[in-house]
Amino acid sequence: MSKNKQTAIVPIRENNYAEWYQQVIKAADLAENSDVRGCMVIKPWGYAIWENIQRSLDVMFRETGHRNAYFPIFIPKSYFEKEAEHVEGFAKECAIVTHSRLENDGKGGLKVAGELTEPYIVRPTSETIIGASFAKWVSSYRDLPLLINQWANIVRWEMRTRLFLRTAEFLWQEGHTVHETEAEAMEETKKMLEVYATFAKDFLAIPVIQGEKTESEKFPGAVTTFCIEAMMQDKKALQAGTSHFLGQNFAKSSGIRYQSRSGDFEFAWTTSWGVSTRLIGALIMAHSDDNGLVLPPKIAPSHVVIIPIYRSEEEHEQVMGFAKDLEASLKQLSFDGVKIYTELDDRDLTSSERNWYWIKKGIPLRIEIGPRDIAQNTVMVARRDLEPRDKESVELSNLADYIVNTLPRMQEAYYQRAMDFRQANTIDIDTKDDFYKYFTPKNSGQPEIHGGFANSHWCGSSECEEAIKNDLRVSIRCIPFDAKEEAGTCIYCGKPSNKRVIFAKAY
Ligand SMILES: [Zn+2]
Image (cartoon, protein in one colour):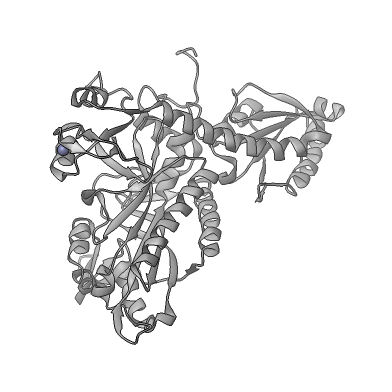
């Protein structure tokens, strides 16, 4: 591929990946920064992706027995204080409501007034406030399991923010469940991680590694945190979802007790799990290219754009009539249980401008129709996974088949491409020297894309983990479920280790 090739996105990935990411979002018109520091405005094309994520996941939650509910955005400070590790984990990034009124300051402005006796925390996560409700809802083993999900917004006062990846306010879902036994809670924790992994694979076309977080990376207050980790095109890891086994920690702090089968009162076992609008960041970074957004068809807000081409008012009328009929017929189609959505773009722009507009937005298929096509009963079809100028003529009578067959193939191909990329950039590393070389860019001034996933031995000490993080900004992404027992030595200190973990730089 020529380095001088014209691309719709400048800079291209290999020249400045971070800036490329911002430019893809801008070119696809997904979101923008707002006047409120760290908070984003999610625009219609970006929000439609989130709605598709929501819809698809919601079906999976429902099928696994969960029901949606909604809890307050404000959490009394005292609730947080009940779980020590939890409050410690969130204390540094809270938005706190301390006043309830605005008053005229006599100088044409307003001053805050009505100080609250107890401040409220704007929810950074809901274990404590949902726990308070659960304590009332659960009284007997007959009330269990309790399987609840909430779709909500979250506030974490982040200092350094990036659209979708890290923002002060973001959207997510949080599952919260209560169980009779430790084994059942653990089973739930793993089941929901599996749901996330399946969703990532089937809808986002992103392969993920399932595993357990180390002590230092787990959720504040959890006994165990499981995660799914994905590789982005700059070879960094992105944590795409987490599922926490909370043991009896939150049941004890919230007072979730139940009368057991033997009549005794016992503390319940709880879990929580979540994914957020961060998944849109993952989607962008896993698939998009130097011409903009690339969307797996199953999560795309729209699947086909029809671009009428005409030179005169007479042609316009003829082509538009044809295009509208075509659009009406395409709207009847579906693939893999997904209804096909269409766009009809007859804006007063050249066909090239309209094509590029939709390429940058990542729409899977583009159909051009002009008077000559109509005369021949054909259309020109272009695919987002091929070169922008690759177009093929498709008989009108075959078009429906073409579309419903091509979209799932594109979906599958994106997954395979992401999987091949991850495999090509995952290696076993056994010496400290090789490990440090792997994670050190050649150009320290403007680091090139480097590294990947390193499968290396780790002795289990948080000192070694911390030292590597300080030296290289590389963290243990997870201890994979499928890591096999194998004798080796810690990549940092050389002490014996019995399994490999995944190290990577991460978002
Ligand atoms: Zn060690």
